[in-house]
Image (cartoon, one colour):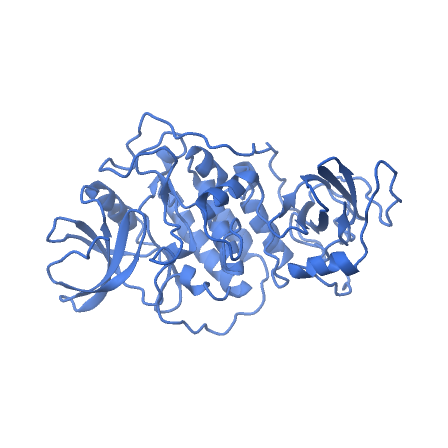
Length: 473
């Protein structure tokens, strides 16, 4: 472990955290007298990288939602150091370590960060590493986007050319980043949506609660497809739908920009403003000793960081890891204007987590034997055209399950169907869930597998809150 360097005019206090390339220390600056955070890269030859990050942050300092840099200085051992304001309230990774945020606070953080990311994009910079640990909390409790260490110019980041310092953080990285090292404004939108999902749940969409962090497993889940719903009853369906679209594996299906993502997020009613939070003392970030290291990691097969600037391309390509191919889909149509609110519906029981297993034991279970024709459903699917069903809420789906060998095919019908409807799904295996575009799904299963489905409206209006009864085979 590298010891903290001696810096003229500064007194070392303690380490704040470390990642794959650098450590951040708390120093007390003597003139002016104040505490500052100092980022020191492990490789003394990474001067170009430090100056790149400093110049990027300086170019974006006009935005109030972006953390500002104080200066660049040099330690006695020659290390180049980035000196920044110290945020003693920590970051959002530690903020949600023990308890997720309220929906209102997540929406406020999301709107502010969308503004910061959109500002960076307008100035032709991509952040490339948006995650909870890189959003700091100011003295006033406001979010500040930080750590532009692997940010890159937008006009050179959308190609598959890579550099030795190309890196990413798997739990929040888009599929195209993990697969091809392909950054774009839409990969930043994906990472921002994954970050907000994390703040709502307490972990990223592609990690399992209680599981030891494994970057290969997490990357595999990202490449496999859709992120699951948050599972929180207080999250509006419009917010669930927006996050699902922003986390779509096909970039063309995501909101077209960070600005548009922020606009849609701001338009969602998420309830009253909560009381100001009480902040616990600052804690070491998740990448500190004794915790999983989710700091940016080099793409597979790339050399360790060198002094080569980020924007200088390297001739070789990263190897393509084995993954499930992503299905090409067409872009979603523009959301329709929200119709008048429907009559009040009876409250429905939302079954989640362990409750799903209980529902499977004591609830109604649809089990279709062999090739026999199932009984007709009680609801009618009807034509799925763009205007069908938008005047009334969609009906509760009726799911059928047919097993063929080691696969189970699920189909479902419901009243007031619309062509733009999507479907959240979850199974009796907690790690399996997601969103699909069509009312059918085939899943591999060696034992009994049960599925529940919920309809999601593209514009978030008239979306039913009921999950279907579980169907098993």
